[in-house]
Length: 516
Image (cartoon, rainbow, N blue to C red; front, top):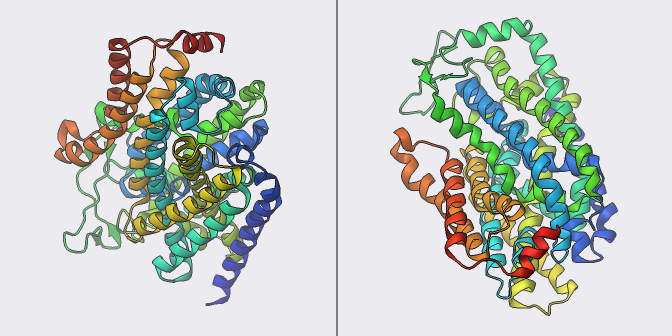
């Protein structure tokens, strides 16, 4: 290991030590009771709520997945995704946050999403709670796997070490950290990590643009590639059928004829924004803020952070093609463009702190995913359904056991070094968006919604994500739509039809809805 690598390692180790310190600091308070561990006692301020929500949401794909898409096939796919996410962020904070904060407290002081849905409909048999918890376990395990892939790629690329070993070490670190401090530690560290992420992006773009000869030079290079810098076209890298890598001729990457990016593709990609209405890691921040009146400030903070981060992340991919056009010759390898820029443009010690931005994104997401998944099993399935008399200590023990099991399964999913982070995240994002998004909106805004409609919508939305992804989308053509959009629509239709076809909700439920 040379001196440059050692300096990078020192910088990242210092960062990881700070993160662990935050976990230790909050450990005592977090372990007082499940409400503190899972929701921080509803004590988040507006800055922490906003920044931790966005940091936990964006994950490693912001610094690796999204720039990788822009590097590989150009502006359209990445930009329309970013636009959809920005719009979704704004409307989620605008129309969902206040009502959910108020409703979750009034509906039995719910501290998890499954508990809120169950209390919203006054369930005696906790079927809705059980289904919600199972879907959260499934999709968050996939989500956690994407974070571990990020860890593995980051450390194996930086230090030349085996991917699997680095991925497992990353999993151990995240597991220990989540064990310690729970939701408060996660939210406090996510606030810090949101700052690290945006600084890492901005500093890298400024240095890279200067190295490329200025903004105009970067744009000229992008425009020279067919479809690369086009909102309604897409670049087509020419890939060798044997090696599965992009061809290079005369030290330049080979591209085919630009593909079209029509209205259907735009709508499909922008549908990422719909996912926000069902993202547990974001919705929990709405529930955890200390005062409903502080949500306006949080909304403004969140949208500014998102706009800056997404814009810069997309531009990093465009910039990377200008500086290192042939360095990354597969869609999976393209996700390392941020790492390549940082290690090439900065002194090793500074590069290490910038690399901490990727680590920040990964930790801030994976701890959220693991904690929410653990709460679903321990709080909602174990205590909510199977052992209703379980003590707080028993629930906490079950949470930690669940954390270990979920992390182990996520490690198995992440074993493939050629996994594309963006692809893994897109599936889990669609799963949450379609399973919980329509139900959340109807729960907060439609008085006539009943339990049967809620169950039908949840099962239909979650099931359609699998059907569309695995059966219909591979057919191509008109079926090649991001699974979130048709699944979200299907879930909404089922909610309305089944609710209207079955008995109205009880007077108790409608009275509570009207009061809230």
